Length: 48
Image (cartoon, rainbow, N blue to C red; front, side):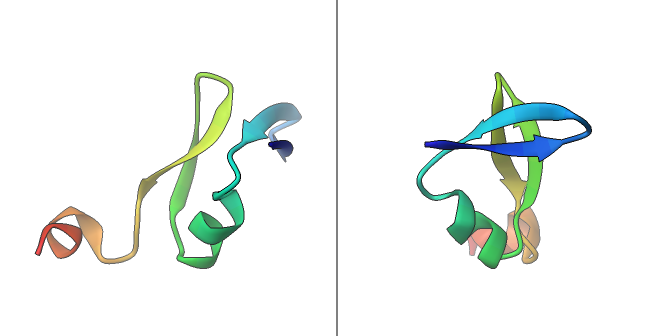
């Protein structure tokens, strides 16, 4: 695992971080990690 820099705060990243970015995920800080919360299709699009 590595780190990402957002707003001068170092966040940890998971091994799948680059894939989330590639897929267009909206990333947010969560418990010290840069985590995906939503993808371009939206919640309903992901559900179907």
